[in-house]
Length: 173
Image (cartoon, rainbow, N blue to C red; front, side, top):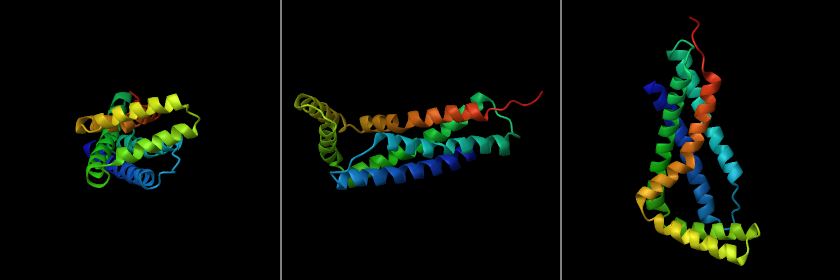
């Protein structure tokens, strides 16, 4: 299982990181960029679908075609955790080394997006206050780690659970 988790986790992590750098670069360098959360999370679901193939590979090659729901979920969750951890580490390095003023660029982007979606002046002021608090919290590396895990890991765990439900197969006794 370790080899499977390592291989599929690394592949998943590399793809997640490539997507991360691409999206951050667009947002950072193009202030008029209009993001789409649905597309972003759909891309994550597609990338995390590698957990399905990791579980299936483990079941078929190491377990003789049979796997319990628990073992399947454990395998998928470990793959998702590994990919997410790579994502978090790359984001920390990328943030501190290449885009340390990311929040200064991101906040106007969020406000412009809110205005584009019809936010009132009061709502914009409230959003700005919230974003300034977020920026202050973002100065703490532990907060960055936690918020970055929250960004990706739940998607990976959900995909792992669904994959486990599809792939579980009990041995005929």
